[in-house]
Amino acid sequence: MTRGEERLKVAAQCVACAGVYAAWQVGDGTVSLIGMKEGCSCGETEFRVVQ
Image 1 (cartoon, rainbow, N blue to C red):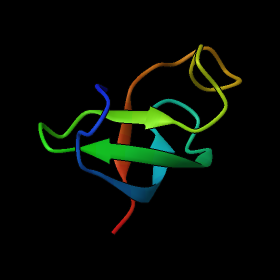
Image 2: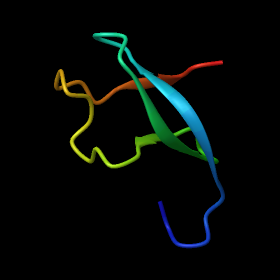
Image 3: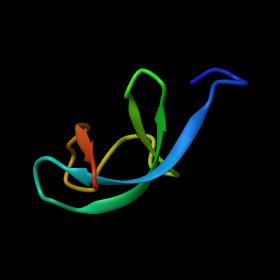
Image 4: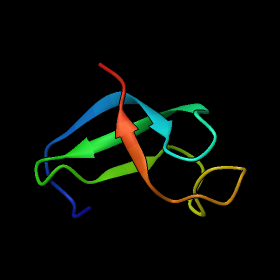
Protein backbone atom coordinates (compact mmCIF):
# COMPACT_ATOMS: atom_id res chain seq x y z
CA MET A 1 0.00 0.00 0.00
CA THR A 2 1.43 3.38 -0.94
CA ARG A 3 0.87 6.68 0.76
CA GLY A 4 -2.28 8.36 -0.54
CA GLU A 5 -3.74 5.13 -1.92
CA GLU A 6 -7.42 4.79 -1.12
CA ARG A 7 -8.29 1.99 1.26
CA LEU A 8 -11.41 0.65 2.91
CA LYS A 9 -11.58 -0.84 6.40
CA VAL A 10 -13.18 -4.30 6.18
CA ALA A 11 -13.63 -7.55 8.07
CA ALA A 12 -11.48 -10.27 6.49
CA GLN A 13 -11.87 -14.02 7.01
CA CYS A 14 -8.96 -16.47 6.87
CA VAL A 15 -9.48 -19.06 4.12
CA ALA A 16 -7.88 -21.79 6.28
CA CYS A 17 -9.29 -21.46 9.81
CA ALA A 18 -12.18 -18.97 9.26
CA GLY A 19 -10.74 -16.51 11.81
CA VAL A 20 -12.04 -12.96 11.28
CA TYR A 21 -9.83 -9.88 11.53
CA ALA A 22 -9.93 -6.14 10.89
CA ALA A 23 -8.18 -5.37 7.61
CA TRP A 24 -7.55 -2.80 4.88
CA GLN A 25 -8.68 -3.47 1.31
CA VAL A 26 -7.07 -1.38 -1.44
CA GLY A 27 -8.32 -0.63 -4.94
CA ASP A 28 -6.74 -3.71 -6.55
CA GLY A 29 -8.56 -5.99 -4.05
CA THR A 30 -5.51 -6.71 -1.89
CA VAL A 31 -6.41 -7.36 1.75
CA SER A 32 -3.92 -6.62 4.56
CA LEU A 33 -4.65 -7.37 8.20
CA ILE A 34 -4.36 -4.43 10.57
CA GLY A 35 -1.55 -4.99 13.07
CA MET A 36 -0.70 -8.54 11.88
CA LYS A 37 1.98 -8.30 9.18
CA GLU A 38 2.64 -12.06 9.06
CA GLY A 39 -1.02 -12.96 8.44
CA CYS A 40 -3.37 -15.13 10.46
CA SER A 41 -2.36 -16.73 13.74
CA CYS A 42 -2.75 -20.14 12.00
CA GLY A 43 -0.05 -19.12 9.50
CA GLU A 44 -2.30 -18.47 6.47
CA THR A 45 -1.83 -15.31 4.44
CA GLU A 46 -4.92 -15.50 2.19
CA PHE A 47 -8.14 -13.78 3.26
CA ARG A 48 -11.54 -12.95 1.80
CA VAL A 49 -13.62 -9.92 2.65
CA VAL A 50 -16.69 -10.70 4.78
CA GLN A 51 -19.78 -9.20 3.15
